[in-house]
Length: 447
Image (cartoon, rainbow, N blue to C red; front, side, top):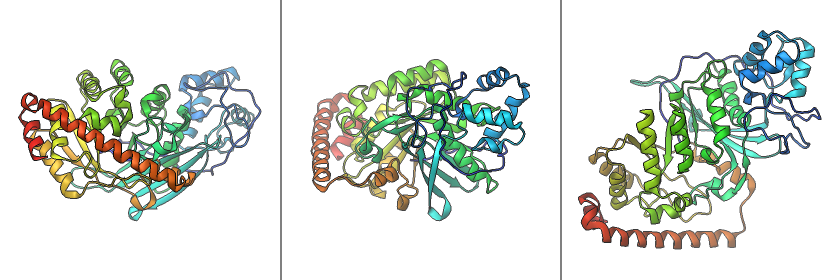
């Protein structure tokens, strides 16, 4: 997980009250259901809880629910304030409401879809990794990263959140990929990760300034719920975070990028690229076999042109795999003339893989090649290494280690696949070096 930098919006956070709890109810679902809610899916602690999370409700849906009960419209505003300013977890905390309405609210909705959270702190308090258990037992992670004020920027508190429990993409350097896919999260389950962070920050007189969808899962494979969550985060009646302080990441789901472009949303699009050459990216990002890298970048290019927003490209650097001068030159050529910014991130240590992070000198060399090509670059430092703050590490730890023979087979398979990919990439580079451009040809000779 990593954070995008931006100035914080001017919005006060409300006080924090209450404590986490799992809820169970046999009440029928409310007629005002949030986007992405599936009443047939089990949820709610040890039993089946059909109540949707209240954070996923739009103001219009909440107003309709209040009217159906013969209550004045201002009651909806009171409920919204309790959810999004005080970050209430249970109906009893809504003391501005009459008791019968509080009871009805508790019967119809879950005020918090998170049953319990475990917080681990690292980097002298600058990084907080949180493991959330949802009401049906699914486990997801979020990370809060604190950045002190400095020359030219204000204090920032960035929350990295999950959009799925597990992930189906299966990138081999990512701990979440080892867990496999459990299910999509509902909009409320996504939003309650932000509310959890905001509640803890409010206790310290701080507020969330940035939200990044870079946790567990592929956001564009759960796009309806992610868009509903982004709308709630951006809505001044709810969380009130500026769109440019929200980043949505994808490993390259081209139809999802195209849909975002049609909608014209103004949040930042981040593409987890990791390699510019198809044979290697096929190994590192399996989705590349369906949507090759040139197709992904073309969709991102159209998005940047339509929205006027720069696309962020993320590259996790793995020693000896994708950090060579040839890889850097190929990336420079791929992004030439694009409205783009590249973030280079040394690989976080992930159990059961044969790879290690690129050394600092390799990262600097890679960055220098991109800068000479006129491409803006930032080298990101890893946060919370000692607490497993990278995507999926804590959940993978809780899931338990696979048996040693399985680990060894996986390591051998990855080594064979990456070696074969590098051979194919070198052959492709050799075939095209004379015509693809001087940068790739020169780098190929050096590599």
